[in-house]
Image (cartoon, rainbow, N blue to C red; front, side):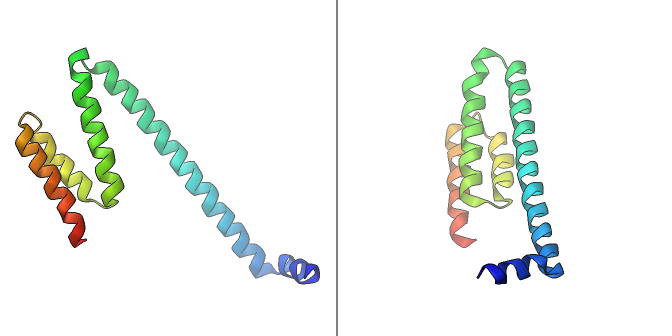
Length: 108
């Protein structure tokens, strides 16, 4: 078994595939870390610009968007968010948009 692994490691194709896999993993981790850092900084800047009475609305919208993204994992959350932001003042209509978005997951 050890002889097989040493032969496999010395194989050029295996080494190339192994290095490509490692490169993709490192790039993926870096992408996630950069993405999280950007969201953290933009969230802090957004909160600094808000009035104190607008904090709950921001928290609610951010939490709702996160829940939608977790459920759909497609481009539907962006459409639901775009429609929902137009109706933030009307709770009933906003709820209808969110429920419609949740119902769309059955068809996708």
